[in-house]
Length: 154
Image 1 (cartoon, helix red, strand yellow):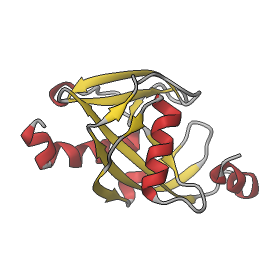
Image 2 (cartoon, rainbow, N blue to C red; image 1 turned 60 degrees about the vertical axis):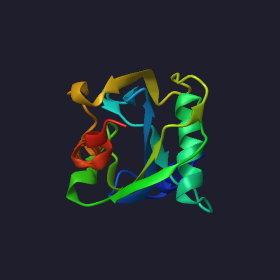
Image 3 (cartoon, rainbow, N blue to C red; image 1 turned 30 degrees about the vertical axis):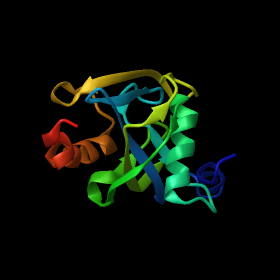
Image 4 (cartoon, one colour; image 1 turned 120 degrees about the horizontal axis):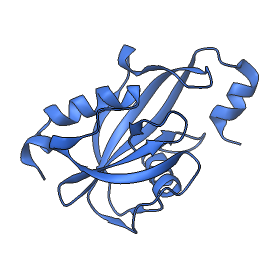
C-alpha cells in the first residue's frame, strides 16, 4: 500500500498535502500524455513520492510503473504548488498537490498503459494538445508552453 493510501485510511477524504512528480517525456518533438482511468482526462505521467525517496527516484519509479519506460536522464523543470493544484479526485479525496516536473528525451522502452491508473498513452505535438485535461495538469502545461522548451520545439 502506498504512503498516500495509508494516510487516506487514517484521514479519509480530508485535505492532504501530496508531494510528487510529473514528467515531460519528449520523442520527436512530441509530448507523451496519458488518459487517466479515474476521470478519463489527459494528464502527464507521474505520481506521489514515497517515504525515503528523492524526487528523482519518484519520477523514475512513477514513469516506469505508469508507462513501462525507463528514463535515462532527467532534467529539472519547475516545482508547482498553490491554488491551481488544489484538486478533488473523483472519489472525493481532496489534495493540495506539490509536484516537481522533470524533462526526459532519452528513455528506454515503448510507452504503454502499464498499470491501472491509465488506459491510453499518446504523443502529442505541443501545438495540438488535448483540451480535456486533468485539472492539475493545466497549470503545469501552461508553464511548459510559456517556456524555452516549447519555444525551441526541442
